[in-house]
Length: 258
Image (cartoon, rainbow, N blue to C red):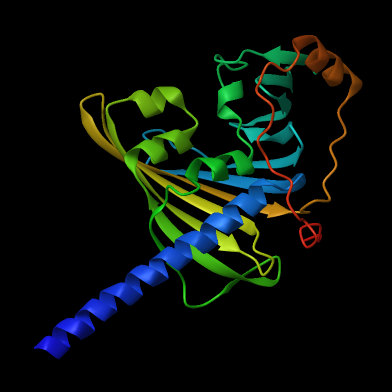
């Protein structure tokens, strides 16, 4: 009996050590990826179970320093936008660049608060994923083998990841699952978020899932060209945000083009 008790204690000790190691490994990858000076990315968003049928959204983006660039199709309408701090400049239907309000988006669709670069989302979940596990088998991203980590998001973190304050404030049960792919250089090159939402919608129980898949590329090699008109608007608006906290550590291996 004494032996069995000792073996069980050792089993739980080893399990807790493995979990701690996986959490630490993922935390290091998150911080290292957030410290990248630049990168490109694609973002694919699907909404499952929506009361209104919705086609998937697909965006392309770039981040360099404190500048975020996004382009794509939003509900059948092409868009192109730049963000610096709390200022978002986008093309209006007349093809002219204009500033978007911080809270109310242009045309009621996009606001500064909704536009987040992948590294900002990583900062939000760093150290907050629960039940982190590491898959036994690697998976390829950009043709290179990656470790795959999975974890759960509690209600507060899942709401924070939504990027939609109105939806997050509704009386809804919100939770999520995160999956992250880490390459051999310890950088996160793919992120998948499944946010589950259960709520009462006009007297009916509704359940839907927002699936957001982001793939990073051109790590440390991305360049953003800002049109002169956009730069003028950004200069006029000024950047009142706090200085970036992104750290620039040793990036000897980070400049590889994926």
